[in-house]
Image (cartoon, rainbow, N blue to C red; front, top):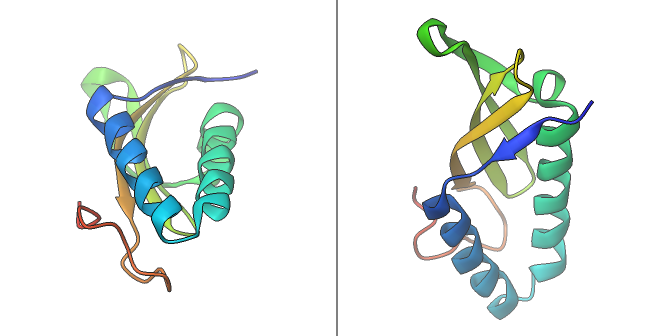
Length: 105
């Protein structure tokens, strides 16, 4: 069963800015693989992929931290409604090709 993945507009815009950086730095193919892999994991394996960090009992969410290659993602999982709420994408500081100018988030 697939989970619905809900990503805030500000995070989607950030990913688009990072895509421009990836193009300019000749890592766009890897960036796309990372985004597709993360989306698959959030859609089909959110409980198995990330590391549980804390629970928001009032909201019925478990918050996870996941990482794949150049990106980290904080997300909450509502198991009852099969929804994943992305909180934040972070560009890893240890990525060998550097990071986007606003990658400090």
